[in-house]
Image (tube, rainbow, N blue to C red):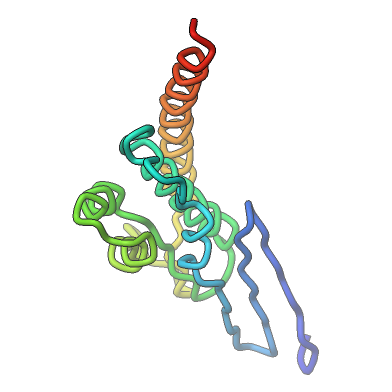
Length: 160
């Protein structure tokens, strides 16, 4: 493919990663995860009192799912660095009143692989798939807590 530009685009739940290969080199363009964090914040007055930490936990778990999905999608991309979110650190930062963009910038980072790849890619597919499955289960559990809270509020409003 010398002289021609090949494009590859991965899209998963609103996150995209573009990779351009030109000759022997490659250049990676990632959309900023911080923009995605803004659409998951709860802007309802008193939402913290109603939903507690579960609303924030759901937003953070969603961001982590996006990061892990991006890692899986780029398992074959030379030079791609696997990213992850330190959930416990991120939740601790919410207690300090930090914004979602500050939390994402501070609590996300690159993962160090157990076995480095020859092409510089740090994605270990089995690790990513396991972490994705665990986080998906935790996401669903958090969503169940929120659903039960909403159902309780609905019953209270109906007078049941």
